[in-house]
Length: 115
Image (cartoon, rainbow, N blue to C red):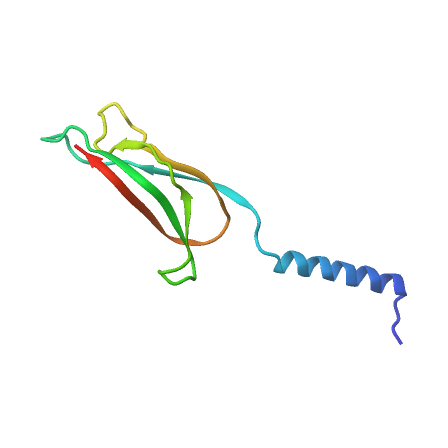
């Protein structure tokens, strides 16, 4: 015989189901990724190097290199990789919301660069 009353068993099973759902459910939280690029080149013959990126991609951990890539953004500003002397902070290339998880690579595809 089971020593506890029936209502205790119902509460125990309900709590157990809630714990299992929380533990096994996929993560649905999101975060903001901000990608900054900054060139550390001394001033010389070239004063500016403007670069335009086509898109920014992240690779999900655990997938092969041919799969698991997803586009974060397809519009990025044109940035100057040779910094101005008074510019201390790197420029933001992209800012986007992504799902929380493990990522192991970033792919930046350039479309145009001019000096």
